[in-house]
Length: 496
Image (cartoon, rainbow, N blue to C red; front, side, top):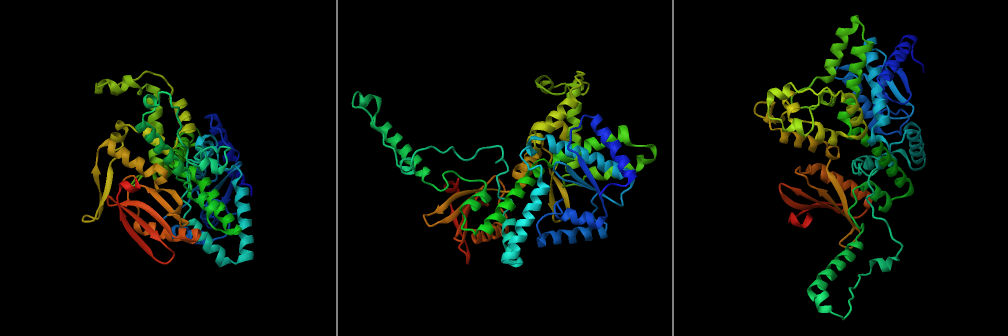
């Protein structure tokens, strides 16, 4: 559906402004929707052609009530695709539509050029439609309730992927030796000549133990821990063909959405930076200044105890641009202990714009924060760690230290803030049972979530499943055999 003439003219203007700043994006196709259609598309994750499932209906009801009670309003939505599809809300003012268009073109630039999106499917609209066709065929054959129940199981496990898998080869290269030769323990041999001097018995024994251990590991299934749990289940769980197909669909869509979670701060910060530039320097007329200021201030508003990715990303990009324009980086600047000199520091390098485009290309949120969040920035923007005080009923500052602030922030962003789970053994205790390991990094698993996940895993694996983890600094193994949950304490060292 084409845009009304007035909006089509605005789109041409914003398109020209975006290109004048050297933004490089896919063709963007805008559609104008009323709030009902907007909520409907949003409930499907931006893809109205997606497979049918009750979860999407639940999301729609949640959004509809939020809009009706004035609790939320979707201003824009954009899809990582080529061409890029974006949706405008029909009831928005013209100044809002201009902001949204500028915001969308910047998002499209980020999708196209950021390295972490480079492996995503650029024809995902077509792929989602194909997925929906597969699911509907399974529903026709096996029944709605059976298929929906299985999709429920898969969706409860959709976070168990390896978000770095597109860039890292996890599996070792396979050799050409026969399996019995590869698994057989190797024996050390030595010549008799000067044997006691060149190969002392103690050394030979140590080397033999190492080879035996390597041989034992090579017989493990899998040989190395597998982080992509969904792929392991797809390959090895006793699933029917239609179940395997649905699990692979959920896994593919999880990988499509993963880069958006990995770059939330950067992506929204980049889009907010450019809509601000385009509006204040090119597109804004005098009569729209107040409305623009109201909308923009709402976008970057921050509440205590909450992280606003629009605000943090925007301010970090602006800070980086200023630092690289003035030369406030490098060993000379870092080693300067004269505050007055630092405040007046200006090398007139004018490298800021080039630097932020470089960052947009190569970084994700973790590396972005780790490399460019400085102590000066944290102090200037009053970044603290908060905790909820039950007595006062409010969030209170718990720490003002920069290193702790940075550590906590990186912890929230690592692996999208989700626990890291590996498949450790697919034949645990030689009984065909599944053993998972939680890589504990200072945060305990939620016990109810862990137990529910085990129950759903067992329904796929069909045999008992176990999870090694650490809770309250004590090692334990949670197990579910299909009927009851059990828990056993073990030493932390044994599961390290």
